[in-house]
Image (cartoon, rainbow, N blue to C red; front, side, top):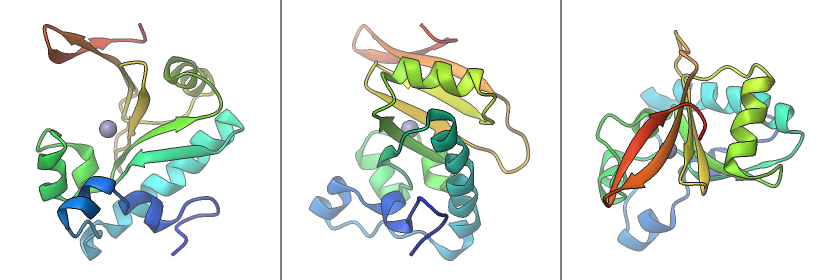
Length: 146
Ligand SMILES: [Zn+2]
């Protein structure tokens, strides 16, 4: 099922962890408007980068989210966030480009120089920018792009 020109519902729900553990990660009907909104917002991300983006984690049902160590309030569980990479550049370069291009988001996180997390809010996008780093084996979030 196509959500927008460049994004399918399957890209939001597929998960090797869910497959392996036989977790049903389909999006509940009441969260479909959120996933739709996220796909629309991601079109702007794609446009700003001028390159396709590869979603590595989109929607996560609560069971899947718990298994991957996500916080229970994660925007992933509401269909409002994705983790992705792009051939555009490094996660930091991607984040910088999205900021420079004025792309709207609620939270943009450069995660360990490995991927980008972007979350949206239907009502109020706060443009929060964070960098996730490991400190003493724990992930902490620092303000801005480091
Ligand atoms: Zn994420």
